[in-house]
Image (cartoon, rainbow, N blue to C red):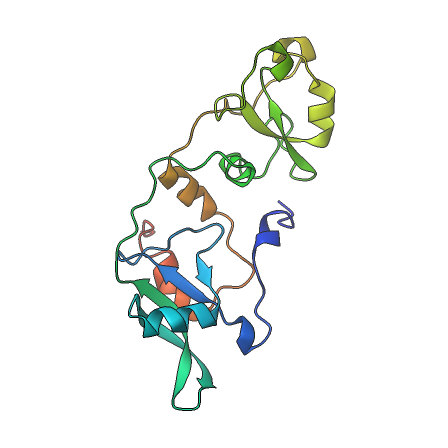
Length: 194
């Protein structure tokens, strides 16, 4: 995978203004892996002052106000647990994540769009079970034909994923920037190698 499409959703820290804080739920798991749940440092400090989060790791960078100085938070934990939806929203991004940013007809990972397996002109609906990620080339080739008419086959049949499935797939696309203080929290629940 060239990764260019998958990583366009991630910021790249350049200075202390871009020191994002990893946001963990009250169970110490990230709210999401892809895109990684990050807050700008200003939001993390504000949430800490409002006692909505605990700061569990900090950057070396210090910011100053007229009355205090503090290090920027790099990892914060929500004080209240945010219940995750059992099923993710049906969005273009979640669809691409479900299909791992690859065409379900040829496996290409560029110029991504989506395709209705049973075309809308033939009664197909826009649902998890009828829409797949497709490259432009395959989408144009299939047009408004059925799979049989187009002589095409799917790598995996489309289905509705649950939230944990998308979280696990998101782990396969780490952002270009991962601060060292985040590592213990990003993969702590992953199975250890023997």
